[in-house]
Length: 397
Image 1 (cartoon, rainbow, N blue to C red):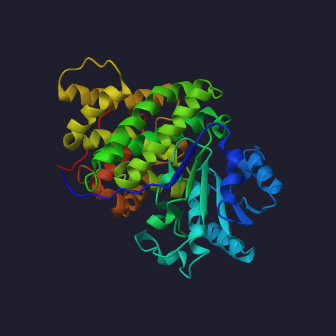
Image 2 (cartoon, rainbow, N blue to C red):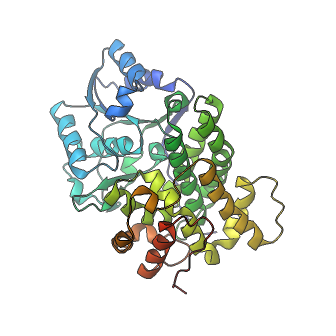
Image 3 (tube, rainbow, N blue to C red):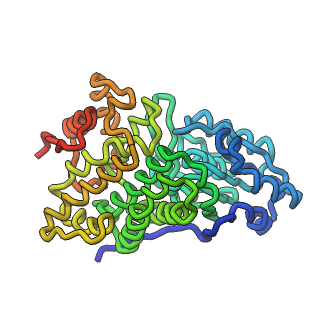
């Protein structure tokens, strides 16, 4: 067994209503001035109300930054940092989706150090101290509440990541009540995103390890068993709870065994066309799985019964094929758009997408099968039409 390092948050709180206990957690740090990082949709839906009320009752001053948008541009992150410094913030709290949580991570770090955002893109470049950081997700998808990663969109529409243990929060606060109002399309897309985290962690070529493997397997089982229920009945608290737990476990898995080509090909879709991240992943998932099949068949076969319990396939090849088919079935059952063309992407855009995907070297190195520019273009081409019954004929040998 190879050597590995495994990192995770010091504290996790998982229970319905957990967000109403945030004042108790903040009090533990002696903080009197807190910045709440969120977006206008989350705040307008009342999802931050309980936390804000409890903090106010405790006499804690809250500065709200709710200008976060999807795939947060660097200028939004920098504006949030400036606001935190102007208000002499002592602790950063985020309640929201992955974009808000990622922004909060960078605020907590950049508000405390002399580093600039442009200086810390990459792995291990953020080496300073940060402010105390508490994260509460409102979607069961990104797992950002337990990862050392923050993704930013640069002025050139490229997605770049900051990866550092300094970004791992002090508390991950999982309150499934915060996810009850999530619309079915968002539930489906974010849920598939979480499943991709588990799949890519399990098949990661560079840092696959036994702890991530077990977390990925547990996550995939929880997510696949509950995603249809959560989409069909958004008020099903039991299904929502299992989805949120599965998302967190998948986040812990891929934080230590990084994601690969699905994310690499999804990033340009989100950055250029502003397609939500989870949906971007879903659009290319089947086609990347097909491409990886020659290198990952044994691992896909191991995952098959987790997503399709009672599977009767006997051969490794049959189990691997059943795994890919079941992932496609989940997308169909949850009514996820099936093609790039369905979200407004034109065939003439595929070359640019492929070129930008190849810039994601941080992710592509983890893929179980080497992927070239021609391969990326072939995958996007297969995903352009409704390719639910068509394999990728990538030119790479």
